[in-house]
Length: 356
Figure 1 (cartoon, rainbow, N blue to C red):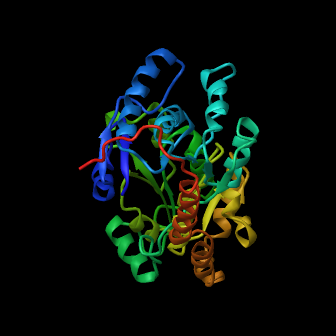
Figure 2: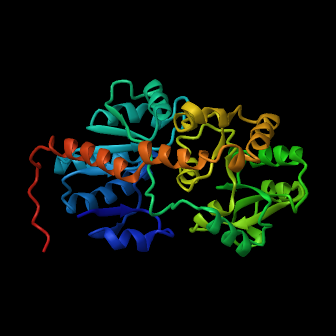
Figure 3: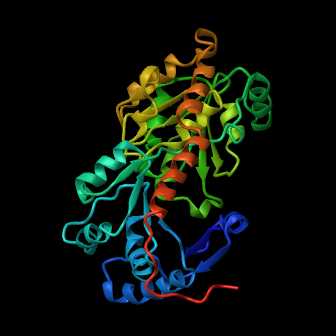
């Protein structure tokens, strides 16, 4: 049974409630550079964690380690910390001094890519045991989209059946490099009836759009469609010929790449962060230097006729994800880490009354 402690409500509350034994909202799980005010809130949250009497404590970020160590001090439960993003410490910050100390109380760290493991080792976790377990997807959640699915999804979206369709799915922020994609698409110079660029990531309501997003929309080349963020991305993936991740920042992993490939779509992405760990081997030819719009345009141009020029590419994309990034493999490897950490647990310092 899983017990979840959280500090802010979100869109996934019902999802977590469906498989967690309990959900406990607490004042704070993280600290900042205000140690005295943070300490009171984190310690209050720690008491909630202590009363849950965990066999193991799993946290999603190093900023939650103070809370985890406080719970561990009483329960003796081992700690596993996920490293799914890398944020450099500010020189002299509380975090730069605190994390190396707290990390010594962590039994296992789990990084989503070799890149993330390397970054954390260089910064403060050189001594720590860090396992690399990449993200995975289930084939049932991202089914292969053959021609009937492609045509049906394009009809719903109002896209010409024979157009060359490229899609981007994600946040619309400068780090994601959508402006680079727009530059590249402009260089292809395709009329709207021959080419469509789908940008999926708008927040609901025009008043919520940032200056960056409004500037992007004004700069849009012909054939560019802006769509709202959505939970169901499969219909977009099925409508596309190619999916692009034009990141200018160091992506920790690049999940949309494996989502696209699982459905039988080649993915073109910036050579940044953990992305090359996915697009390796024959798929390395789909990488380009971050912010190089001309190189991205060349990759998109080369893939325009991939269905006829290389009809086996879709199957190879699907097999690549199934062999390297399946959800079953990710879950199995994570379970092994958790069980190993759990086996190291010592007897708690204080015996609390068992919950009814």
